[in-house]
Length: 386
Length: 95
Image 1 (cartoon, rainbow over the protein chains, first blue to last red):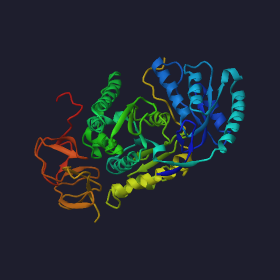
Image 2 (image 1 turned 45 degrees about the vertical axis):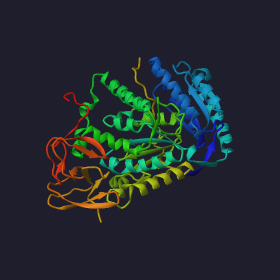
Image 3 (image 1 turned 180 degrees about the horizontal axis):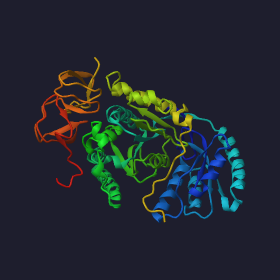
Image 4 (image 1 turned 180 degrees about the vertical axis):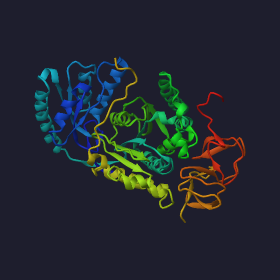
């Protein structure tokens, strides 16, 4: 794979060159958006966290913001806080400085309210946007790609067409030394032994099993056996018989690639190849986790048609459902439905997905980027709001 | 030839219908680049599975060359494989 990317001071490669206006707490979201709306080339990242939470959650939110700020798709970063939040803005600022990127900070309470903060932020972001526009791309390769995997709004076509085709792509990419991050630990349940079997060694396999057990225990801790309703009556009506079958369809998106390591939510992989990251399956939290881990492109396989993208990482929508392809064309980037009736082989479809990743990495816009369906993001928390 | 159903891995003993299929008709089943023909003994709805090999009670049901459950009775070639003759081995307190 060859693509045109932006090489950052820390060696990571961006497939985009945005100014990130990142809110460090829910109370600063309006101001972050107010700034980004007024500066071309900038994007806002907002979320619902950052205050009145337990220390493990506050720490995870801070670490996630560090990861987002260091994502190579951002040329520079403007952090916006309120001034009394629980997240550690100095720590986030330092992490971005350490990555070699420019970062500015604004506190609404110090600046004298939203209007003044937006005015100051607009001027700061304008200068950052001008500097970013002077940056040039260079030729990059598979080893510079950090691909995130997501599947959602799945149906029977997901396990038959889109996920196995993506699995072919993933096997090819890891052979070429790319990094691939897979989350959605919830959808390992019933197939975790397969994922553990794909691990590079027994210890890594055990980490996968432990992660799945931890996810399951979290659900049980609120008094619910989440497997009680799996597969759902709708799944059964659609032909999915057991939880094993449902999860096997979901994990097919990593093919038979070997799992090299297991990471916490939003943690940046320290190795090449396929890695597993702790995360739930829901879009806002998983997409954010993948971006925080440094993913510069995300593939999103879907059956019924999920529209969400991410503010500064291109999200390629791939469906195996012909009806969804025809009906939701303004959200779907690629269809592999011809696999279903033999019109295309898995390898051919996997190669098309590979080509799509290559062109999107070079700047071709995804439907989610064009439609701007990228705002409803959040950060994964496991404790109560207090 | 137009395919009616797919076998994901050649080791699998079930195929998944990619169209609504009728009893008494021959289904064209894709296995990789090849196809086989299976006479269906029951109607099979889109997304549902049927046996492509003789399956005995207690046998593992294989899809993706992985165990997705166990046969609770014999399943003949062309017969619908679903909750009435196939059970999960996971997430059960009674096993």
